[in-house]
Length: 63
Image (cartoon, rainbow, N blue to C red; front, side, top):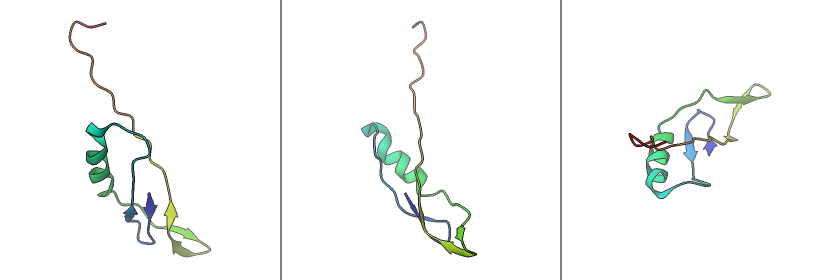
């Protein structure tokens, strides 16, 4: 994802995932905000990675 000088995500994509979660994850991620990143005292855009792991709950009675 690309985070701009104001701490807002301006570009995001799923690198690896499952079609059931990809769209939902991107919508949620794009609402996140970060504190601006600074380099030599000035806010800068940065590229970052977020890793989210989704698992299905086990069905009752399964081992």
